[in-house]
Length: 101
Image (cartoon, rainbow, N blue to C red; front, side):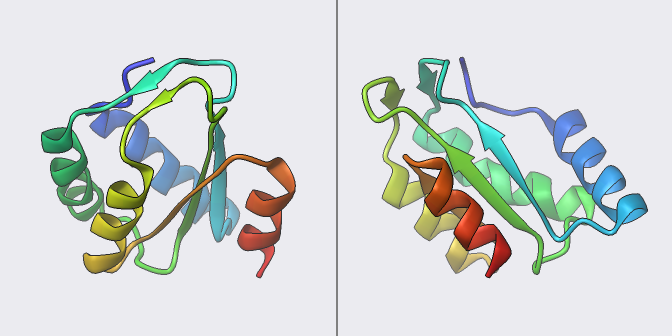
C-alpha cells in the first residue's frame, strides 16, 4: 500500500472526528506492505494544515514490522516537529494505550 498523498482521506478523518468528538484514530496497516517516499512524508503535515487538522488530534499508525518500508522514526519526528501527534506502532495494545493516554 502506498501511504502517499491522500488529502481527501485527511479531510474526511478531520470532519468525522469533529462531528463525533473523536480525539484520535487508529489506522491499521498490518495486512499491507507499506511504503512512502521521504518527500511525501515532508508534504503530509502540510496536508494536515490545509485540512485544518487539530494539533491535539492523535493518529496511531499500526504496522507489521516485516511489511513496512519506511523510516518510521523520521515520519514520527517530522510530524512532531510540526506540532502533530502521529505515532507508529507494531502492537495494537501499545497503539491503544497511547491513544487513551
